[in-house]
Image (cartoon, rainbow, N blue to C red; front, top):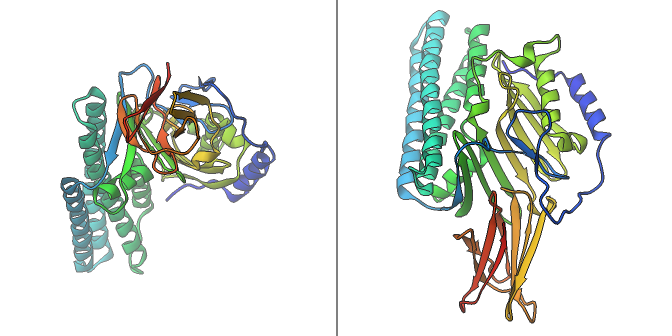
Length: 413
């Protein structure tokens, strides 16, 4: 059974935090990214917006851009995972319905949960192997996305099976789940949050041809991964820091007289002070059974944050941002112009969105141009002369080339 912060505590937190809301964002002209003081989490803070989680800075890292679009092999692989998931749910239903007594039906439930737990453990190992292979450079970015989509599909099917088990027993008036089994189901759901996410689901949709192609920024270090994409209406960023997920380590949030979920919420406020001071709504604060995983879901002036904090490390191990790109403060402005072409870059923090505009230098007429970032193709500006892309970590080099072959470069060390 999921833990949830008491309603009175939610209301009190909302009143306190909403009273701290400040006026609009301040636009900076240069980078001022720093580490969060007094924390061990791999989180950087930037002025006047939410913090972002990053893979460990001292690990070997890899970053780049990859176009995610229709891929028949990837579509078949994810379809196979979905079919296998449907078969498992159907098998459970048939076995459950064939039993005559409540205890026999519970035996089916326990056996199905045990098999699902083993599959989740295997998924966890697959994820770590995948992350490390990408970071080490032994996988292409295209292969990484294909395998990530299949992994996410398998995780989604495991979650669906757990939900089917829970709903099937709840609809059976003659059978009820023991508390220990309810707790186990909730804990397994907590383990699954380390795998799927909104951006990886969107990637899977593009590979199956169900969504428009997108350019995905990928960054890996050790067993941590950041994925991000942006268009004119939405910025999505997803970070998974496996090193901060520490099952087996004592839950630090349970070491006081306070409710662990309340302590986890306080920790999230420390990790995301700007969000706390500019909170618009508390969407959800919850735990998963007796696991050490806590979800903090908040809305702020720039969008929504979903952060999963682990009680063992007390740090963020999974983070999801959905934001409006034009609402995020600019941290870097740079431009370059020649006799015929001008290129301007307005960028937010590293791994955040940046807007590239191209125009004719003498007339300021928007111009269609191919855009490359650090040598990699990220898209074209089109007739409006503008393109949203993800700013990489570290140095930045934006090259705009028109159909006539004219090029202008904007660079920043």
